[in-house]
Amino acid sequence: MVNYEAPWIEKYRPTVLNDVVGNEEAVERLKVFARQGNIPNLIISGPPGTGKTTSILCLAREMLGSAFGNAVLELNASNDRGIDVIRNKVKMFAQQRVTLPAGKQKIVILDEADSMTDGAQQALRRTMEIYSKTTRFAFACNQSDKIIEPIQSRCAIIRFTHLSKAHILARLLTVCRTENVNYVDDGLEALVFTAQGDMRNARFYLTIALNNLQSCVAGFQFVNSENVFKICDEPHPLVVKDMLDHCSRADQPEAHKVINHLWTLGYSAEDIIGTIYRVCKSHSLPAALKISFLKVGDKLFVLHKLEIGLTHMRAAQGRGSLLQLSALVARLCRCALPAYQKANLEV
Image 1 (cartoon, helix red, strand yellow):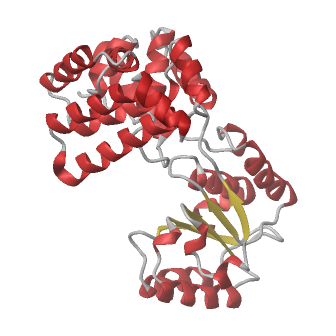
Image 2: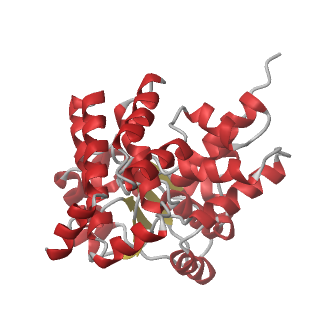
């Protein structure tokens, strides 16, 4: 008989607010609502994967207790985004009679609420007014400004931010100890690095980190950086750091050798550029070059990221070739030339 194991992202999903990682101030406000036993309509906005919907569910469990199953309606507004859903599912749920403790209300949770059409939001506004005594509405969204003003004015708005590396590491350590995972520190650091996803700021930090951790344990039974990068199939950051070191010395031939090697290994242009970007952000530059960079007010470092960003855009548009990567290396090497730095200093 095959032993199926639940995904760790679900197995270790918080069920109470005390277990939610990060966003301490926002979570503390939710705890106050739970202690008071009464919540307003809520809008929780922030990047994906930071625990918005999970926090709302934790709050609902603490508020409703054993009545949670009958008194909560959860909808993903990106799928159920039309006016018919509001008129049928939401309105019918709001009309239902549910036996609840005194002072408690039913809760409608709308995930990805910024995907709802304007017509659906207008219909929802009226529903919120009619059933305000018996039903509360909680919206989870990436951008609160896409929620119409009449709904915003009826809600308390709470904003979530990205999880820090420290929060992710703490959660990974908890899971590793619970699951008796064999690991070394560089393996956990690699998991945090790969969890940073693409070049956008909306990253599924913890979700990706836990998924990669489980995959690494299933495949190798040991978590180190080498195994993590094999599982994730991403360019190793130390190799990319080596390339950036050559670029910082304007050593174009050696930098080209590294980029050609990565291309030969079969990595896509977007993966290579994304890793270059992330390594570049945290790269420790040689002292002399760092002083030179500081003299131009960090313009050169910003230019590095700008050049990488432009190349990533071209790759995303379908022009991800070795030629683009070679051109990027040439431009980064040019940035390190004394004459180029002097020109930037004068600007």
